[in-house]
Amino acid sequence: SQQGEEDPQALSIQEGENATMNCSYKTSINNLQWYRQNSGRGLVHLILIRSNEREKHSGRLRVTLDTSKKSSSLLITASRAADTASYFCASSGNTGKLIFGQGTTLQVKP
Amino acid sequence: DSGVTQTPKHLITATGQRVTLRCSPRSGDLSVYWYQQSLDQGLQFLIQYYNGEERAKGNILERFSAQQFPDLHSELNLSSLELGDSALYFCASSISGGDTGELFFGEGSRLTVL
Picture 1 (cartoon, helix red, strand yellow):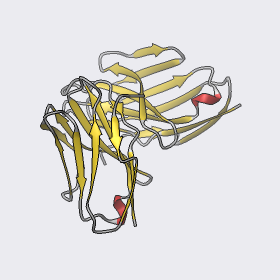
Picture 2: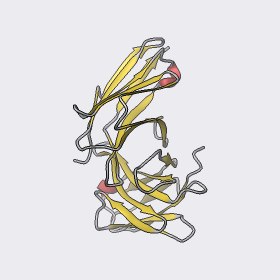
Picture 3: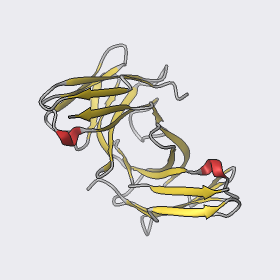
Picture 4: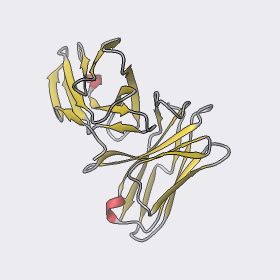
């Protein structure tokens, strides 16, 4: 399979709590990206972290990257009901392909 | 609105038929990517074009073909359709063709094969 793995597959939390999603990938990368998809809609880019970076922040999002473990995590702080969506990591190597993981479905309860 | 336009939004057809999905990238973007999303396979990379040339290929079936035209719009042709081809097909675009940066996705074309 092309894809890496994401963990957990599904996550349900209360509004205000933090949500953490993990992603593993298979080959060496130039960058790793996170996308969000509302049900049946197109994916929306959230954040990109380069292979020489270890941590990146954007608003309530924090992404970490561990290239030695071929893994990344996405933390959404102070979650809101509007954060309910599926979240995908995507790895970019030298081939020009952007390979997506299976995704984590996040439900934030009001 | 990502600026990427896909048509048609929905398509219902029969097994054995052929369909064409169309994508107009964001203004200024030279790269177009096609992805297939299904419940059992997830989001699968099919193919990438950069400025009219094929740049990268994924798990695209031989029954499927794509091209990017001089005006940079792209078409994905699916032939001899099977039930398992039912999926959401996404087009995405980006400025670059090498180290893949941010992709901008269209809203997808939902194909149902009966």
